[in-house]
Image 1 (spheres, rainbow, N blue to C red):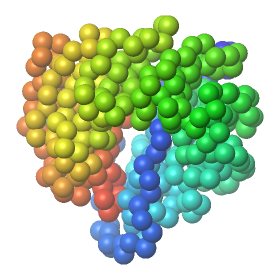
Image 2: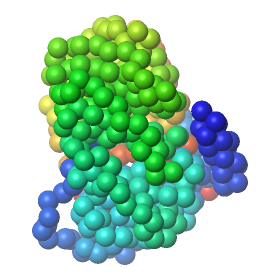
Image 3: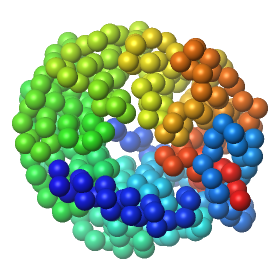
Image 4: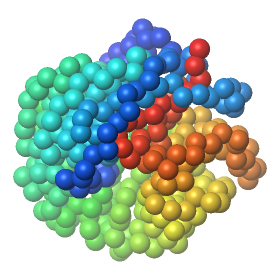
Amino acid sequence: MIRRVLLAALLCLMLAACAPTVAPDAPPAEGVTPTPLPTPGGWTRAAEPVSLTNAGRLRELGTLAVPEPPSTVFAHALALDNTRLYGLNNDHLIGWDLLTGERLFANPREGAVGVYVSPDRRRVYTLGSDGLIRVYNADDGAAVENFRGIAEFNGVAAYDPLGGFMALGGSDGAVQLWDLPSRTAVALLRGTGAAVAALTFSPDGFTLLGSDVNGTLTAWDTESHEATGALDLLIPVYRLLFSPSGQAVAVDTPQGTLVLAVEGLTVIDSITNQPSAGVFTFIGSTEVLAHGGGELELTLWNVTSTELAATLPGFIGDRVSVAAPSDGQLLFTNVLGTGAGIWNLSNLAEGSALRGAFRIDDAQLREVAWTPDGLQVLFFTVRGPVVVWGVGG
């Protein structure tokens, strides 16, 4: 608890000093012939957060370059102060400075499938499919240490970016909880004995929720390491996701999405009858869940009322992604092969979602992300480079 308070205070000081500013996807296949990249253009610093009032001034700020041979950035993480971006592609762990657009370093990937940033922005962690955790200096990529996270690791992991805790699931049902800043294994949490299927931390990091392959959920207190609740859903669980308020949990299952109350770990309602196919995320800091992907229409659900807030037509296809700033009033959408667009969600409570005029007709855009401070919208391309948009000075 004390450490989290100190880290939060440190983050506030870091932000004041700066100018405006679940499992991971599988990596791409090896051996793909790379496409030569054009030379990146200049860089414009973001001047103000993108909002409803200035969205008409959106422009491309620049491109974050990837090293040769270029390939898709399949996993990424932002520093808590939004000034650094780290990513993994087929060959490299890459760090970028989002204030200058410069590439900080490009290290060999070493089999990593997930990347994370320490709360104080000093370290970058990668996680391999074998459970090996590697620690790097966040400024220059220098290797610091590596260690085995859990012996029976089965690919299920969750990270608490505020506290720096990582939970690793095992095929034997155990969950190893690590304090990564101190590189300390703080607890081995025992569930039902069935393999772990999903893990997620609450927004404040004080609760870890996990499910086994049979659909039995267990909640643990991350400070006392005691189990605080359990629930048997009797159906498999694909993903677990706390709402930004920490009061509810969205559960992705073969039969659709369930909404659970964290207090008492009880089922409130079901809000869809199909599992998500790629999009399963909350819109900014709101209690609105975006759900869809593949052949499913993109829908927005209010998990507090468990009602459908809006359906966004036309977003069906491969690799659908969405991104929003913390206030949730704007939403960027992207479909691989089609391009990106923007939506006005300011009247979503009244059932209104308006499509904006902004559009990027680029079939190479694979994924969209938005820095939580609202300053930059990141478009990850199939070829590798990250195209950055925002409101320039």
